[in-house]
Length: 243
Image 1 (cartoon, one colour):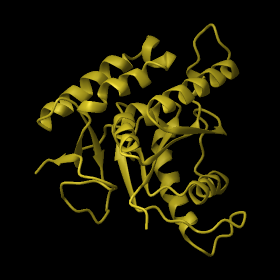
Image 2 (cartoon, rainbow, N blue to C red):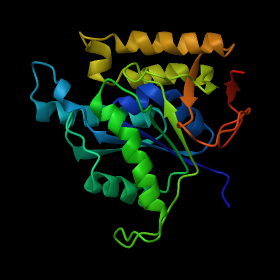
Image 3 (tube, one colour):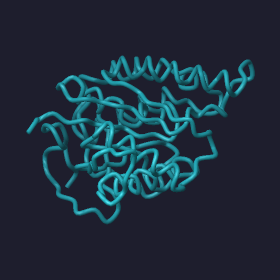
Image 4 (cartoon, one colour):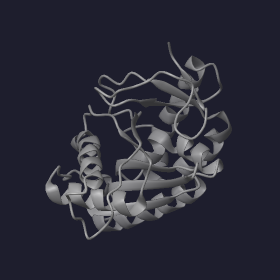
């Protein structure tokens, strides 16, 4: 059995997965694990005045591809529309099909409470797709069943209701590369409504203070999960737990 993991970070929009867990993803990639960023939508409706929605969608996908390369992974962007995501059988089956094809062991996604409807639906879609991908009774294009080993939630400024971290991952050595990846996104560097780059740099610093390291990113177990406090996440020991 291989000791390498396939870590998939699932975000509602291009950029979500990277800002939430990009440094953790890069830590995995540096250790030889496979990393995939799955975007359910491009997040195209926050388009700047000089671009159409479709042109901005294409731009965000290009930005996502550049960011993924910097973080040592690949990206997949589905065709669902920003702010119109649905928790329906078609969407769940599409994600389940990707789980069977890509075979991730560890999935990181949004926290379950969010001010953004797409964000709130994303972890519910992931959990339903996990079940559907794992059960042999579902025939999905003849693909073999596959079950995820562990699911985590990660930290997004729009998803903070009830988000209390369970684990703090030391990403000090990965943080500069993480910031380089974030800088590939126009909205992160140029948004007039929220200072994304400053916020996530400060968040990494603040979480690092709490973890007694320079920079950290956090993860949270799903509500009701059978959790264990310890000194590791799947693959290697890279975290500090708060007692």
